Image (cartoon, rainbow, N blue to C red; front, side):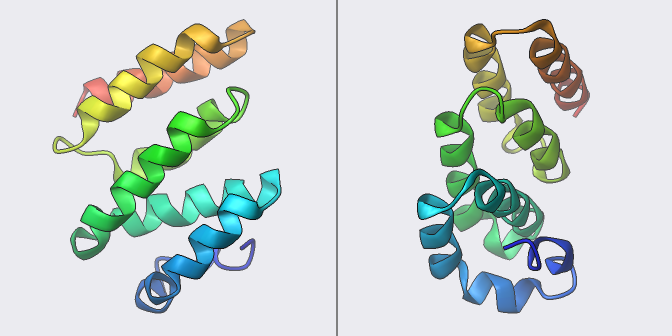
Length: 119
């Protein structure tokens, strides 16, 4: 997974073809595996032809991830958030922000939310 995340933009077709295996690995994987899986989904999500499949998968990861991972996952997701899907990401941030245990998490989420609101 670590090797795949940096090359998604170059090899998106091949990586998308392995999406089922990637998701299976993410769902059973370590935090590092999930981190890279979220990055892969976000980068694939930028491509219109994958959007309808990858966006729900990315959203699912954001809803279920540990709160301490959410700011990083939202930041990784910013590359694929657009006018079409921004409302769900705004909702995830607003609802999950209440779970945050420290100010730095809230600040990072607020910073991402400001970027999303500009779309």
